[in-house]
Image 1 (cartoon, rainbow, N blue to C red):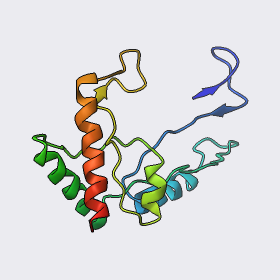
Image 2: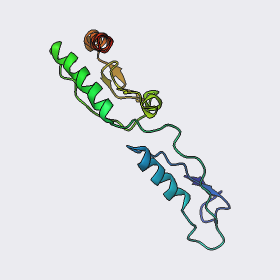
Image 3: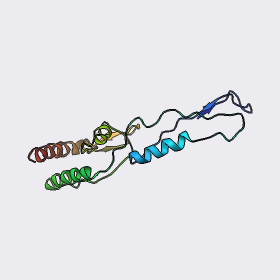
Image 4: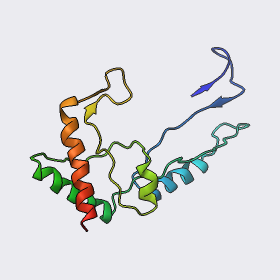
Length: 143
């Protein structure tokens, strides 16, 4: 949020940027509609809403669930548990999933602290994660 020039002076202009996340396209559409329906509460002011979601949500479709089950099976064969999760973030996978392509995101390196000063990768997990992706590719190729 920004606006105004000094303390105790009515701002000529103010703006706000909203970083919103939605689990489904329908939820994203509802949020955009609600934002565009905002009206000013102070006489003589206006509200202008521009923009929208720049990336579609990666929805948990039946095909995504099936692909996750296959990946989980491959991980189990290697003695690892592959947990399911979501972050609300975005990747190129959001675009492939929106096209109906079964998509999993997060099969790469394991770590923590994304986009922060303490971001790191668990080097010891790199080999099994690479083997997981290779095994998933082999299983999918055999179908």
